[in-house]
Image (cartoon, rainbow, N blue to C red; front, side, top):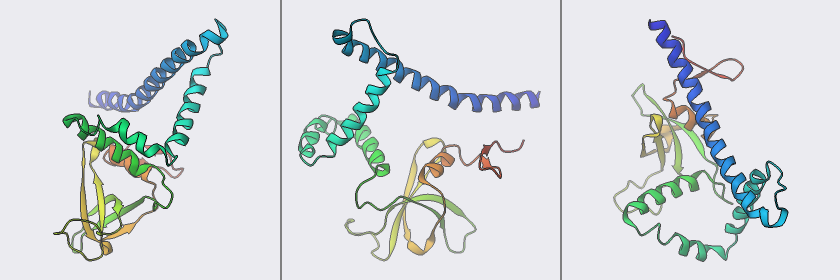
Length: 204
């Protein structure tokens, strides 16, 4: 019975992320195809090429990125965001999502994200985190002003995390991308890699 449960659970955790990803892609494709058909129908009638919605969606996202990158758009964006940044509950959700997305988005002159291992001297403990701030300049009074960095420590299953300010000597960069570290943290580092680099489930 235990073996049956283990096989079922492994099958479930394998199928769940795949099924969810496929379902979200299906929703996006269905919505984009319907929208594209409605927009193009006055011009092409009943003639429609499957996949046009996906192409229009990709192009629209690209053009939006080009548009919001222009200097004159900053003022307009601030006006659009005004309702989302002033309504109490929505403000917290929108600001958190925007800051999180902005952290991972590329910016000219912005230092690359860095995955580090945090080791407290004298303690046989290692914590994996992301350096989010290289110094304490500009922080309010009360923070220690020596050579310190801010490290974000994500919690398993993305239920939150902690940001700690520690001496720079406590952290050591590791050869791992931000995406890999966040994905591993999401599943509490339960997966491991074989010699070929493929993720496998831990042994029973």
